[in-house]
Image (tube, rainbow, N blue to C red; front, top):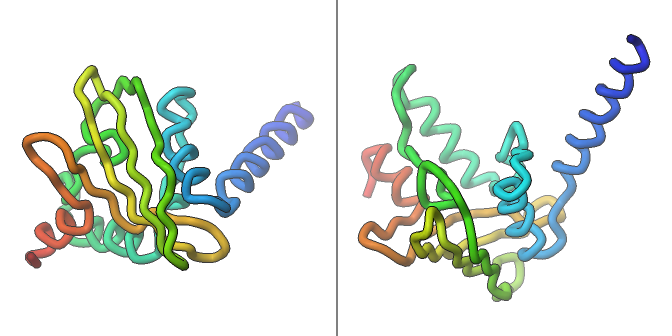
Length: 154
């Protein structure tokens, strides 16, 4: 019994260490974001993908959202929807300018074409998502703008 507990503890510690490792390239970060949608192994805390600034927006939104209510983001921005069945995922080449990068991603979710643009920042030795925008469809959005609207800003 103790051996099983020890093995489980080591596995969880190792998994957390792997998830906390910095992403050395923008493409490695984007691949890590989409990997759980094919394996079903989602990280307990996806804040490892976010910049400090973007995480601050998520945290502020959680603080201002009444208990039991949905915050500013009522969908999964990585799949541009609430449900997912991803096909035809294509991660574009990163455009890098110093500590900033952009990566375009296209895929089909539930058979519908999607196009997202990621703005990334180099922080703490690795790439992090700083903003995401949807550039296709009837309702284009930018993640930071959704948080701003929810906070009463424009």
